[in-house]
Length: 375
Image 1 (tube, one colour):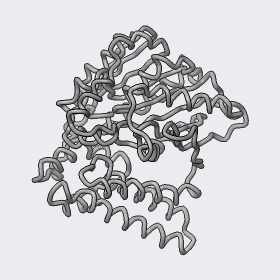
Image 2 (cartoon, rainbow, N blue to C red; image 1 turned 30 degrees about the horizontal axis):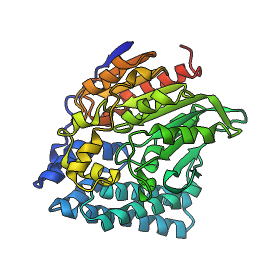
Image 3 (tube, rainbow, N blue to C red; image 1 turned 180 degrees about the vertical axis):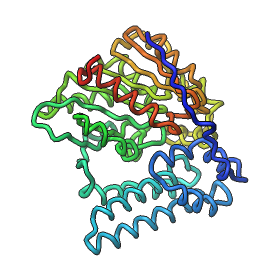
Image 4 (tube, one colour; image 1 turned 120 degrees about the vertical axis):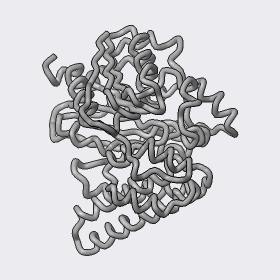
């Protein structure tokens, strides 16, 4: 078992100018502003949009307006033939729509509209983005998985990195990080599994997420471009549970990464923001808060973590306000295979405030496990 501490030089990661009078809005801003910035949303858009929010009930509408402005800008650029710039505007619109709806579940009609607009604006951009992105679908009915696929410029079978979204992220938000991996020679698949993103329209969260991972791997190994012996699974936030959970049962994986995931979701229940508890209730299909807490207790590695024999890396920020770093350390401690733990000093949830610390560590570690980088 390995353990590493990454020390940062930043004095503070607080975003004090964007604190808000409404307690729910303030909690969202304190928790996720680094995530919004890391996703490429300009600070000006964040400040302008949040200035229009008086209470949490205004959140979705304000972000929908911002997303719509960027989508219309993309439409205008496309009309004059500037498709590359149009794609950039549509992708930014998609991100803004996602920020608006992702943990806002009081008005389910507005939530659904935000999801639809996020998907539609992202789809507009797909024909024009590089590296190229293809939408894929695996299975049918309530078990259907949807994904985004990007391939490297290679004729031979290539290693595959599967990106898993967390509770409220999606294949679209996860695939924004695919470029560097594709440049390194990986095929990248970002998938919406049960209760995630587009798939939340027909499915709900299930603790045995390995079922979805296995279905995706079944599809991957049939593809002529895929090296089925070199498949890595990378998950952040709640997917930092999903990925190690899948490794307990799916042994075709060559490497597994969890970033700021829980060992036991119920143990974190009272720490997470109210909007996150509400979002879990929605995405899990729970009838009320009490049932959501019961369902949360099913998402645990208790009694199965020792079945993780695949090489495992867990990265965690020591200032994660949602999931204490001790949760990630416990996953590593209880795994029976080779496992490493990296603690990022000052890192917040998913280390969004210091992506230059966590991102290279993850890619280099995966490269070593898959034999692409010398150990």
